Length: 171
Image (cartoon, rainbow, N blue to C red; front, top):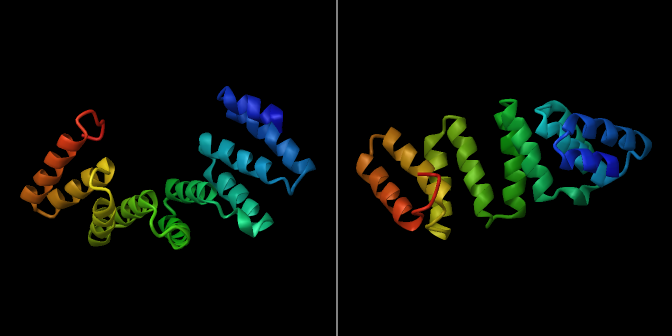
């Protein structure tokens, strides 16, 4: 396990995968090793394998449905254009943490990708209602408003974005 961690720290994810897989083969119920193996797969773009490891990890221990595991699982689904599977994961996440602005923002991005701009707008507005300076949500909302032919509203959001985050790379 430690050998895999050393390889991962150096960015040698292919070698980390081999080391983690060897460890998991010997200790199949080791949660940290499965999580690390899933992360290594994620880093090299082997999304189906990452999904498999995260699912096995959650099967091993129902308590493991941690936000970080589920976030990575949703990300892997999105990379494979499996938007409905990602939506299911995000629904579980928001049920666990209904006040999470980060998860709401991600749901907004996902619904936008699914071609549901009204739902995405709602999620971005929810985020901004709780944190008016959430730069990415404001930027995405402005983009949606421009696309909906509401340039004055979009410009107001961008003006607020620049004023509140003058050093932001989002703008």
